[in-house]
Image 1 (cartoon, each protein chain N blue to C red):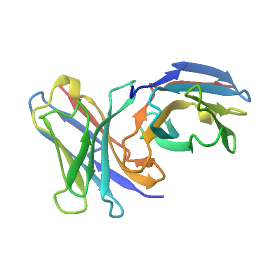
Image 2 (image 1 turned 135 degrees about the vertical axis):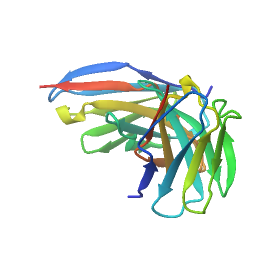
Image 3 (image 1 turned 90 degrees about the vertical axis):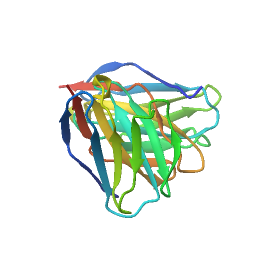
Length: 112
Length: 113
């Protein structure tokens, strides 16, 4: 089964600060996804990333958000100026074939 | 049209009973329907999935029933166990691979002894 690690597991930040969330898949993948889950709510799609370009993004993924693949292996999600409502679990996911995706353990972001 | 509606929001079942969670979708272009199980503090984990060309798929105690004409599908957990206590999400995605998952709102299942 494919494995994905995410760091940090928990990030606490002050409102207005920048945060970078990281995701490292065990093996190389061209497709990559970020999702967010506000506490007690459903999992929401943020952005998909294919071959070093954004292939699709949701309305949640505004100009404050960006994604990168800085060194060919890990993927990052950057939030430039965090807001209280950005507090959530952020999951990266990789495709496993046939339409399914494997989710990482998540990063809990707390914005104070 | 991208929404996936899920019910009930929460469910309490006695050990050994059957848990049933229902989902409905609107977008007929959806081509793949996975169910995910999520424990507190963990990421969603794929449980079972179905394509619209079959009406039922069974894996162990878990069964998906699919009604294409009604645009509905459901998860049945037979012989429910306390270890099944978790949040369950239905999801849908477009065919062709590489597409996002659209999740339902989740069902918090508690299996009591």
